[in-house]
Image (cartoon, rainbow, N blue to C red):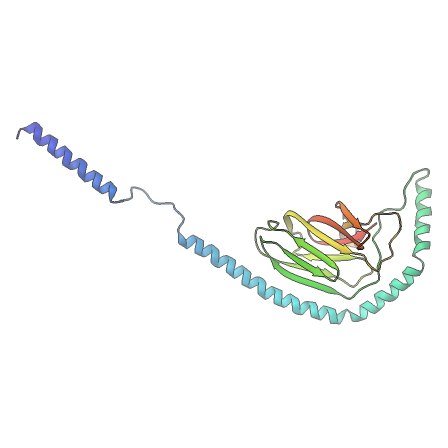
Length: 239
C-alpha cells in the first residue's frame, strides 16, 4: 500500500470517529432548556399562596361574624335617622332644587348627582378566593361577577355592605385592577326612588365624593342597577 493510500485510510478513520462522537450526543455547549425543577418551584409557590389565602379567608369569616354582632346597636341608630330623613326628604330636595335654579338662572336641570337613600340593613359580607377561572360574590341582594380571565392569579376578594342608609358596597384588595370588565349589581329595593330619573352606579372616594360614573343599566322591574367596573374599591347607587 502506497503512501497516498495510507493517508486516505487515516482520513476515513478520523472522519468516522468524529461522526460517532456527534451521534453519541456529547454536548458542545450548555443547555438552556427549562427543566422540571422550575415547574416544580412554580407549582410549590402557587400552592403556598393558595394555602395562605385559605388561612386569611378563615380569619376574615370570623371577623365578619364579630362585626355583625357589634353593629346591632348602630343599626338601630341608623334606622331612626332614616325614618326622620324619609319623612321630609321631598322638602329637602325641593329646597335644594330651588337653590340650584337661583344659581343657574334659565338653565335646565337640577341639583348635582346625589346618592340614593334606603332603609338601613344589617351588615353583610362575603369573601371568596378567585383566580383566572373567575367567581361570584353575594352580599344580601347585591352581586359581583368576576368573569374568566379578569385575574391572572388568585386573590381573596372581600365584599362588604355596611350598616348605612346608602346603597353602598366596599371591596378588597384596595386598588385591585381587572383585566376584563367585572359586573356589579346593586339592589335598591325598599329605597326612596325619585321618579323620572335613571339610577347609576357611582365609584366613591373619601367623604362619599363621586369619582366615576361607569355606564349603568337601571332595571326598574327588578329594582336593581348594573354596571361594569374595572377596579376596586367602593361603589354606591346614585341618581
